[in-house]
Structures are given as C-alpha cells and as structure tokens.
Length: 48
Length: 251
Image 1 (tube, each protein chain N blue to C red):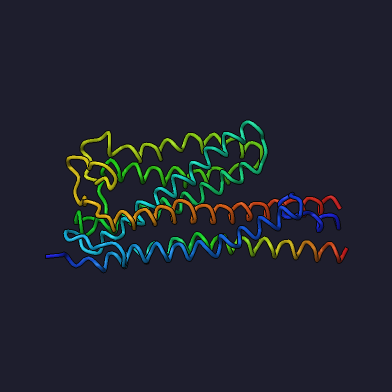
Image 2 (cartoon, rainbow over the protein chains, first blue to last red; image 1 turned 30 degrees about the horizontal axis):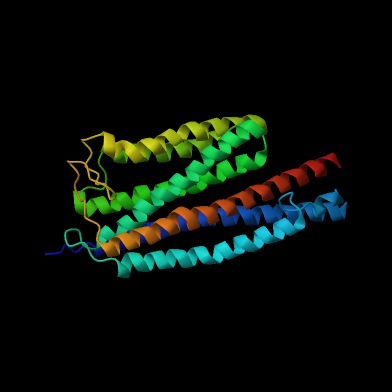
C-alpha cells in the first residue's frame, strides 16, 4: 500500500516558497532603501 | 555634484543599459512562469512513487536546487579568478551575487532533503557524510558573507572574497562526489547507481526523468541567472550611492 506522505510534500513546497521569498524580499528591501538614499542625496544636492 | 545625476546606472553606454534592462525584465517575467511549469511537471506530470508516496516529488526541486547552487557558486569561482587577474570590481559583484543566490539554493536543497527524510528515514536529520558535507557547504558560504562584510577596505575585501570563493567551492565538489567515495552513506543517488547502504532510492521512469530534466533547466538556468542579475543590479546601485555620498562630502 502506498504511504500517505502528501503533508510532507506540501511542507517542502511551503519551505521552498518561504526561502525564495526571503531571498527576493531581502533584495527588494535593499533596492528600495538604495533608491530612497539616491532621492535623499539628489534632494540635498538641489537644496545646496 | 550635479554631474552625479547623469551617471549611467552601470557605467555602460545608454543603449547597452536599455537592452540589458529589457532582457532582465523579460527574464524576470519568464522565470516565475518557468518555476510554475516545473511545478506542474513535479505535481501532475511525473508518476507517483509507490514506495514513498507524494513526498518523493520533492526530489525534483531538491536535486535541481543543488544544480542551481553549483552553477551560481561555480560563477563565483570564475568571477573570483578573473577579479584576481584584472582587479575589475564588476567581477567581484558577480562573485558576490553567485554566493548569495547559491547559498539560498543550497538552503532549499538542505531543507527539502530534511523534510523528505522525515517520512522516509524516520528522522529530520542524521550525520550522514552527504548531509554533513552539504551542511558544511552552506555554513562555509554563510561565513563568506559575514567575513566579507567585516572588511572595511574595498580592495582587501574583494581580494579576500575572491580567494575565499575559489577555495570554498571545494565544499561543493565534496558534497557532489561524497556519495561515490563514502560507502557508508545512506543517501541515495538519483542519477547513476546508489551506494549499497542507500535508503529511499527509486528508479526513474520516463515521466520522472522528464520532470527532473524540466526542473533542472528551471532551477539551474532561469532561477540563478535572474536572481544573480538582479543582485548585480543591486550592487551597481549601491556603488552609485557610494559615489554620490563621496561627491556630496567633497562638495
């Protein structure tokens, strides 16, 4: 009889999704922070 | 300081930047679709293993994510060698992107393996040679990120990271070949003959081979390429901010 292991498959897929989201999310956050820095520096430049 | 605004994003001519941006955007759209196609082959196309049930399907991503890590970390070796020869920082950016993406894919490989092992080996973890070498590999590259962030001087940091990235690849090679040279491992080989003590191995049917091949392309070409490219963009943007800060200080 085939063992019922679907729950572990779903757990695996959830883990893959979480790790990928963490990797992509960290890049998105850093990208946005850097764009914010550029805006601030440009603002400082125009003010001076 | 007003000249800073006109700096091209990657120090490239505008036409190159636009073409590359278009290509990256295309890849960014294609890659999630490719992952979904891979998932379709994993969940619906490949037949179910009678002995293991549905958890066996994790193997299509488990094996492919290691292949992706191999590609990304291999790029780090290549970029490290070229950086040491040329001292051009763009190669260091490629090396760093390879480590970040390779580490992420290595963690996916490790975690999916652990989840598969629970119902098949009746444990989340065992200090098997293959599992131990995979864990050492992940820790080695995590240490790369921590150590390089602790070096202030950019040239020293890049040189150190290049040498470290080249040497660290030995952990990837050892992880890859250890099931062929250590007869006491219980980790099965999906491609080729399994070690004699292997537990949880399975024969690949034609539908399983197709599912594995599709996932290999998705996880070892599309995923690392797209993520590494975005990581390089991030590095370029960071360099631009650094330059702007320096010019602001000069003014």
